Image (tube, rainbow, N blue to C red):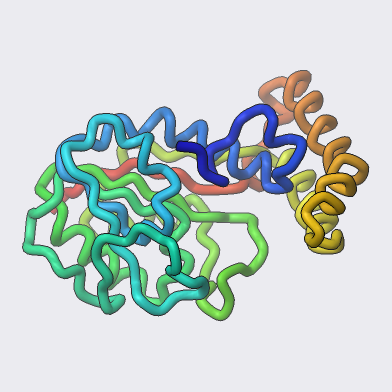
Length: 236
């Protein structure tokens, strides 16, 4: 099953968010197979990564009923009130939470709830943006540095196993330029957008691909990056 979040090479011809989503997708292919047993997708939305949970025994999608987008046609299994996850203590083996925590006004409360329903030693795979425009307004509350999200997780009962910053300085700047052009382009009719995409956006994506191919380590600076990807373990 293909979704708008799972990236292929042909997406350069139609997806203006190619770089940010490609980096997330690459991280998920690496880490999602570690989430085994009973898995909770906290803030699941349309479950765009469901097919990547290859080692999960069960997969439960949880989301809040009131959010910045419609839940029509989304495959949410359980709604919750934004405060109390409706499952018993130590219920899930692992938890997945992607691009959600920036939309949570009470992140510590939510992380404590995730910790509560997670079995001792269970893993949490969490992602959140660092450089990205406001979205799902007005429910967009925060951006986290790698140090900020690490502190928040450790303060609420988790230990960090691995922390990754997706993208790099040059790629982030290019992705934001592409985003700006995308905002200016007409989206309907679809065929018109696709034509304009080839003219204005595709050359920038190709230049980014070529730049990534020749950049060596020291130029891939990480002070500016797309997303935090953190694999953590329940400590207590």
